[in-house]
Amino acid sequence: MERLAGKWLLSRHISPGGRMEGFAEFARTEGGVWLRYHEQGELVLDSGRRLRATRSFLFRALNDGFSVHFDDERASLFQEVYMTQVEALLIGEANHQCLEDRYSSVYEFSQGGTFSILHTVRGPRKDYTSRTSFRRA
Image 1 (cartoon, rainbow, N blue to C red):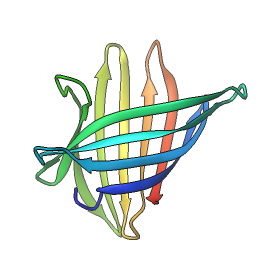
Image 2: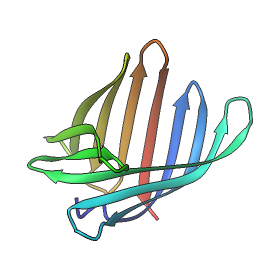
Image 3: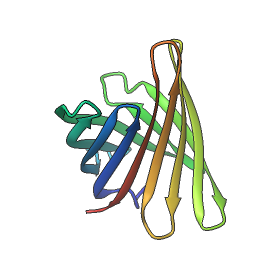
Image 4: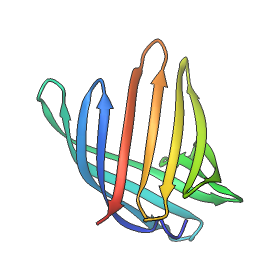
């Protein structure tokens, strides 16, 4: 978790949908239990429309992984991610059921300090893939 703390450049590709370029920061909260993740950037839709985008989550360390929570009053659980070493990578997989839509995610951390998050979302209301790559700012 400590390796996540700090500022990151992010690049997201959403298929279908568009792309986003921006910044993210993991900052320790007052109680020290959570890392608050906040991202902001410009989302460019496939139509060419440009929007300002922001999102926040809370991360908490677990044995062999971390949990991701919505950044709201309840800090509702989004996913629990347990990491395993696969050659030079740390990889974790997680799922989240949102009504009838399912988020299947892969978190991949390289020894070089970069990481990526892949969300595949399928259901009656959502059908897309989002891959976000992070590197130190």
